[in-house]
Structures are given as C-alpha cells and as structure tokens.
Length: 162
Image (cartoon, rainbow, N blue to C red; front, side, top):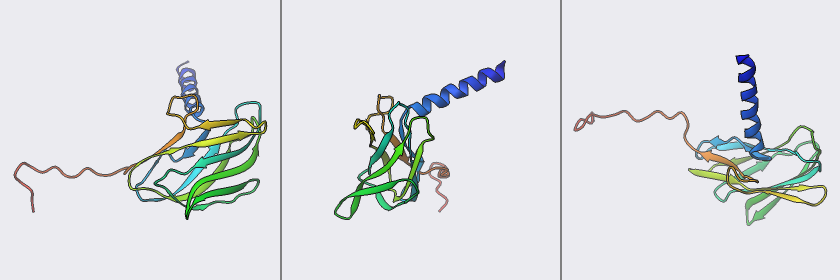
C-alpha cells in the first residue's frame, strides 16, 4: 500500500508541475556567460489545435542560432542585429506529444530569464504565457546561477595565510 501511495503522490506532484505552464523553456537553470541550448516544449491541453508559438527573447540574452527541424518552420523578429522574438509554426493537435523546438544562446552573467510566450490556436485565439509563477498563464523562468561552486575556504581572524 505504501508503494501505491508513493506512486500516487509522485504523479500528483509531477502533474502539478507540468500544469504550471503550457509553454516551458528548459533548462530551468543555466550557467552565467554560457553558450546554452534551450528547448521550448509546447503542449496543447484543450480541444483546439495550436498553430504557432512566439517566444520573446529576454533583453540580456543573445541568440546565436535557431535550429530547423522537420514538420515546422520558424521566423525571427530582429531589432537591428539582435533577435528579439522567435515564432515556430507547427500544427499541434490535442492529446499529441508536446512539440519541441530548440535554439542556442549566449547567457548573461547573472539574473533571471523570464520567457514570455504567446501560443496561437487554430480558431484564432491566443494564450499569453507571460504571468508570474502560480498565475493562470505563467511564463517559464530560467535562473542564471553558478551551480556546484565550492565555497571559499574560511580563514581565521587575523590569519590570512598569504
């Protein structure tokens, strides 16, 4: 019985996490200044197919390349030489596996990347995934942080070992 309870709890936690956003950008954490491959996962949970996803590129992020793939097209919007938005076009039907799109970017040195996304549906309606975590239409977030860093060694007061 404990095994069933643990399995049920896992499913509930996982379901709550995945219902948090319908357009998710991965990874959720990345290194400062790194060249990172980002993956956009777009889901259709309603009864109407989705036709496109537009992702606003955070101001401190520099997109290097958008990957092409089979079954979809993409367009970029630029401000001078900087890519400020990417739109992927693909028919995403309800109950089909999530669509995945990738691009490579150079991270800023610090901060939080708020990924504002706009999902357009076949009936012309649009969902704006731009809100705070816990809101009805939350934006995905990536934290830029050093992971696995070792803390600096402690020194004794007045004793610096130079």
